[in-house]
Image (cartoon, rainbow, N blue to C red; front, side):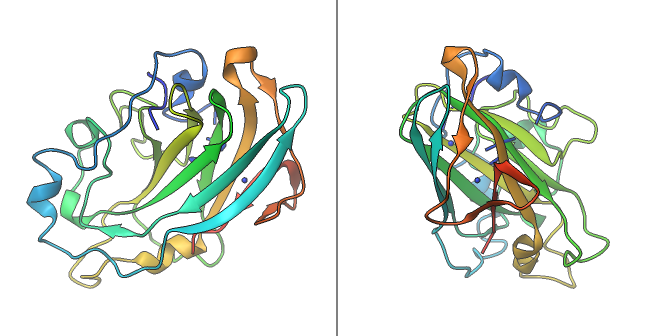
Length: 234
């Protein structure tokens, strides 16, 4: 396990004790910024299916943070849905045994004013999510190595820790087998039916001192938990 290289889980922000990236918030090594592409993999599938024409990036949350850790501000931005590409994370394609041209993913970027922010991001389905979906997973860049080593390999929660990356961390919500003969353009509409929750916000470098979300200027706290931020995927 290693720390997040890049940023109310985004991810989950946030992402859970059962997530692939638990070690990232428990003191793993420093993070690095992911390259724009996965060498030798993305180029091979780019021509298979064009990037989905979905709007983005869109800021979905802006929340003041306070408490024993001091004060901060967290913003959450959702990027464009990408089709037929692997997430731009070093090593992801080497360890995740999936049909890459059939994937869709959406990036979620968390940005705080202070480095060393950690948390959980959890994705869950809702009553509006189509039945019979293939696996959905969330992966924070740099939060686990190798990726997809758990059972199941796609998990709905991951942990982030922004270490040496200016308070920024990026999660990728990945839908497996989105591109099929019946859905050649993928299933981008699925993402807007998912719930995304960011919680367990804390400053890892100071003994995991907690943050408490304040009243959002953009977005909303979760109705069942005032310490969690719920964000939509447009």
